[in-house]
Length: 128
Image 1 (tube, helix red, strand yellow):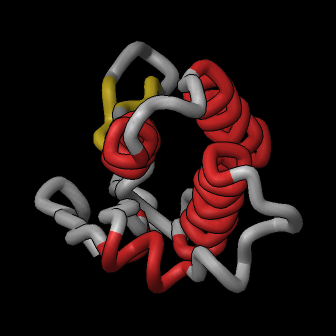
Image 2 (cartoon, rainbow, N blue to C red):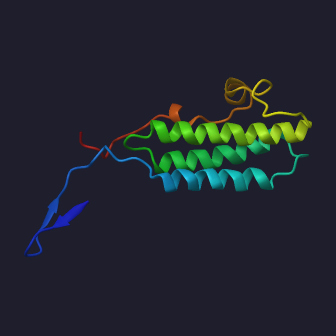
């Protein structure tokens, strides 16, 4: 990141770690998850659903792997869990939201759903 001074001289600025994803970006990834899961038919295997969701989560988390991200990551992870639960309930034709049958721990440990908050973060470019 560089800024221009009067006279055209460039001055290097320091990296800023206080940034976070905008609400518009969080809503965008939630919509992307809705589209991906909505397209998968109920006769598909649950590994296919988790794989599709993990692709979106991993890409989004890699793009926003700087700054204050924990609140945004938790919102996105909750939404991803909710979408996978809905799909599982639709597949098994069960009533309700599926929180009892498919807890967050079950989705994460057994099915392999990716939790973006637990991904390693690297700040090789940042200067604190």
